Image 1 (spheres, rainbow, N blue to C red):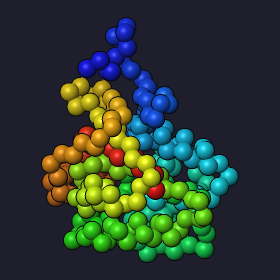
Image 2 (cartoon, helix red, strand yellow; image 1 turned 90 degrees about the vertical axis):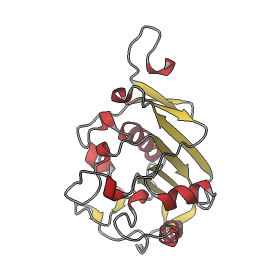
Image 3 (cartoon, rainbow, N blue to C red; image 1 turned 45 degrees about the vertical axis):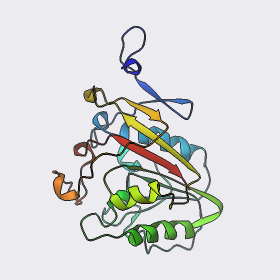
Length: 220
């Protein structure tokens, strides 16, 4: 595929998202060289940079695992760590109103190992909207084909998105972990959590084992 190498045949070290070039992010934690974190981290760091000195909430403790010095609030149901509030995002309350809420591949894990419902997912989205300041915005990413309810809500335009973008992984040359932006989402056969092997100590599916093909990045 032509986008895998440049004219000299050298492997690409960057990708393009919304017309802007980013370097692929490399880190040993969950081995970003093999998964979607390689594009998520630089995109979301850029989003945070554009909201400097504003009130920010991160749903799911992700960024500080990758050497990012975070000063914003973090809520995560299961991961015990410094600066992290352990609460369910569906019921989390705060005296603050946030100018920016970000979530990196977290919402697909809501009710992952129980009998979740579409309403449960809608409750989570409703609550984060209530946490927003006036003119605040939400940016989140999630892999497609890992949560049926989330897929259906996106497909049926029930999330109230203002912008939707999709990054597709080249699976022919999968070891290169090359991603490109595409216009339309690509869905695969749904794989329930029971089919996914390998878990972290926190009980979360290890990203490197999911073999994600298409990533959604949305603004609400």
